[in-house]
Length: 225
Image (cartoon, rainbow, N blue to C red):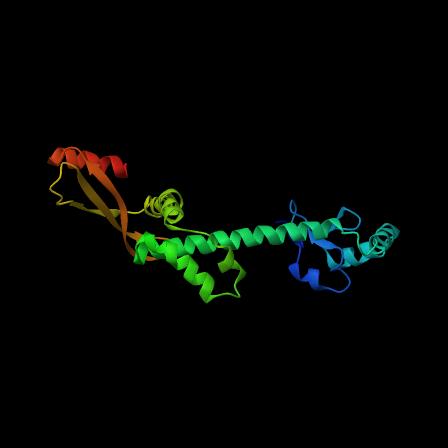
């Protein structure tokens, strides 16, 4: 940087402006540019500087737009209110899905999945004032599907992402089942850069067609490659 020159400072949008009495009625963040603010009345962008925002509020364009918006009939909804209503519904759906996934994870770790038929009803009766509990609809079938199709693949991807840049140890154990179908359980142990601790985690359970040394080696290699 040349002597006597300063790096230009770029002001970014501040969330606290949405509580400012002079700005909160019309200001919104600009999704495509953090150095700009959006005027909901004028449908235009303004530089995200407090003085610039106050100057914009004094323009004739903004004053006319404000007067027009405030003169709407009481029974006529503004577009923003429609989006807020939709956003509330989306948030309800998200909170319900999160509750279902948390219950499923708990059952997968601690209890048989068949308990889902009774646990959901118990939560609804135990927490009658909870809107989320009343919206959760999940039995053993849905619980099993969430484990095999959502949680299982997601946790596997997170595990592989965490361990792929680290050295790890493999622990294997073949099933002692006397039937013709045998399985091999694979567990990994490694130092997690994300959690900053040593992790011992289940990686997978694979069917074994060949229980010889070469067969087991090939099976493990196919999983971790």
